[in-house]
Length: 339
Image 1 (cartoon, rainbow, N blue to C red):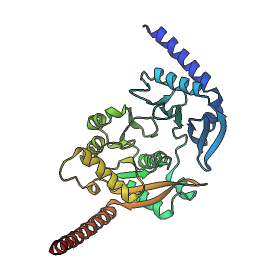
Image 2: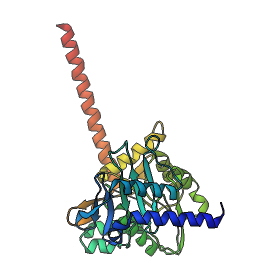
Image 3: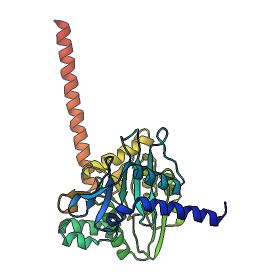
């Protein structure tokens, strides 16, 4: 098939896709909405940056939902089917939204979510001035960036990890405008205006390989979008340990304390025996949460040494409690046998 024929097919697919999406276009155009959800009953809800989840007042019937999913699948040259692969991840052309879809049997009726990439790069100063982080938290994060600490940013889904990461990258490029930045992600969400920049957009199964080859681009800073697996966590840790300080990545976690625990858990998937001390490579953890009626905000900024000490204390307490319980069980067993 020649290039003209391929172009014609793509244009037809795009026209068909946007024909099915027509009722959603006003929602897509509202830049205050960060995530759009089409539920199995056809209802549409959206996440407002300040107000939280709202009802969009739109219905998308089941046939339209199936058509949207299959058009997206065809344009992404991927497959989705009931038996072998009932999920789809991709990008919505034109808007650059991240799309996730699922069909039966995983759900009763097709569901689709759209995530908007950050429209505006907020500065750390704006986070402070709008009350999304305290003055002390602001000073700690800025000082960490100036020291070229490695920063791990965590939070739940929709907590604003990507937006805050962009704010940190902005500050990095202000401190070191001539550094070479290498950004690796599977969905184009991170933004950087450094003069020397390479951005890699890779498939999820290519993430570890991309990090492994990162040093061949001779970067000063290696920034990774979101950690999801142990092989990527290991490769990233090794890269950051080779004289490349001042980086940032994100992770899903419930608290600043659990961020290191989750990172270690990922490493344990691919490393047998003693795990490396993560706190030697990652110096600062920033945890974000979404506050109802207010939007994303910084909850905690902790130095990893503080977290590591706390985790060690908890582990020792657990070991001590286990030892005491073991002694008690031995005594109880001996007593019962004597009777």
